[in-house]
Structure formats: C-alpha cells, structure tokens
Length: 153
Image (cartoon, rainbow, N blue to C red; front, side, top):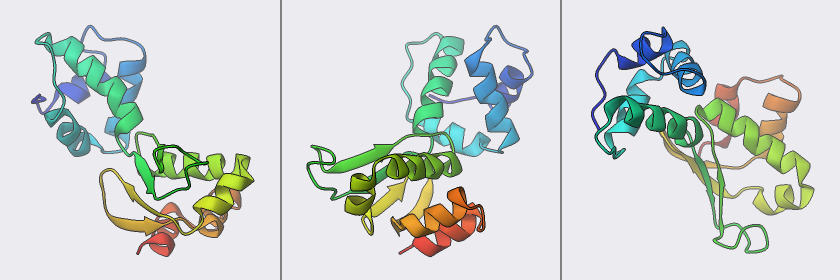
C-alpha cells in the first residue's frame, strides 16, 4: 500500500481519527526519523481498502516487525524451526530485547553465541556476541553502533 508523504506526521500530531497506540507509534516514527523505513514497510502491506484503518494496522505491525532479528541455525531445542526471531520497531530496541532474552536464559545464550543473524532494514550480516551486547546494554560502556560494528561479519 502506498502511504502519503505526510500521513505519519498528521497521525503523530493528532490530525486524524486515530487515537491511542497507533498515534504513539507514529510519534516514535517521527522522533526516530523512520518515515522512509515505514514507507518501505507499508509498500508490501496489503490493506482492505479502508485507508485509515489500513494505516492503523500497518502502524501496529510496524511496531513488531520494523527491525526483526532472525538468528539462523540455532539448535532445535532452542527453537523447532532452527530460527530464533526477535521483534521490534528499531534495531536498537530489537538488539536490547535480544540481550535480555539471552540474559534470562543462559542455556540459550551459550547455544546462540557466534550464530549468524540479520536485522530487517539493516544491511549486512552479524554474529551474536553476548560480550558486545553486555558492554552495550548491561554496562552501557559502548554505543549501539559500536556493538553492531563488533558483531558485523
């Protein structure tokens, strides 16, 4: 579906009939300068013809799938499809969620160490380094960009 250039700003400013979570998501898209990424995401989104409701549904889905991490070749006892997926709107949020998921499950942390992963909307492939994730999200001693650079293949 094609999104008009200024529709996200209108939603974020409360100039449409949408309220609640879609408005909050639109505000975050504007604040994080993700309009282009959202337009690309929406291009592949199918609607049923009711434009404002289609945009609302697309916004809600973008919150989940805007920066999905897919870790490949994980053991079946970690995930039966051998893919671990973490969902979020921005790659920073998704990486943070990956860190917390690995922190809460040490078995998963050890099994996923050095596994390759991709991030929807970010070019390139990466290898999980729990140490890099810990330096970024646990200690806060490196930035997300530095963490990504340490894990880039």
